[in-house]
Length: 271
Image 1 (cartoon, rainbow, N blue to C red):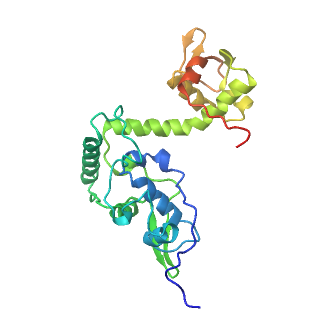
Image 2: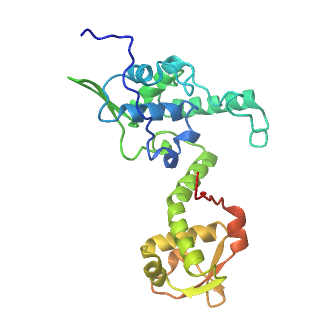
């Protein structure tokens, strides 16, 4: 039976790289960086061979709302008004001024590092290959895509200003310690009933939570950093990062601050 070129290929689930959010590229690249990463992540699935154009055609019939101009669409730094209303508290200068500012900063970062400034999504995808965010190989079966398990960090490739560097470091710290804090606080709430004060050690907490002492330390450091807790030895403040695993200390929790500053999700029993 002759192949019918008008029949689209099998639709597939869109994949997202696990390291995208922690890497911080979302805060550096144009807004199409997110859907482009999803597209390449999907193309990296073992059962796919072909170009990104092939994937767009097969999966979205060539039109994807997140890439309204396709691979040859111009790069933008904000979402259209119908997709995302403008936040004037975060950027009081307005959409056009903010767009121009971010575009200028992005171009300056690339130029300073010796990279060409892309104008389209397709040109940005070529930069992904240059930066090592993605790889493309021509095989007898067709084009194969892949992505590294851990993405290169923006600061490893581009010169970022101090404000952005600090923000990305904070994001990575929070995402890295978040699961550790959740496990630790679950023990404090469910097992100990939200104690205001606890005389303990890293070793004891590790045994009680099933975590490593190093992970418990990171969780406590984050709680102190966020203003949710204090660490004391005797009556004096202590540095959780310098505590020996066996040393006794007092963990003083501020539960009002903790519950008031952290988002809590509840899942209904029935959907």
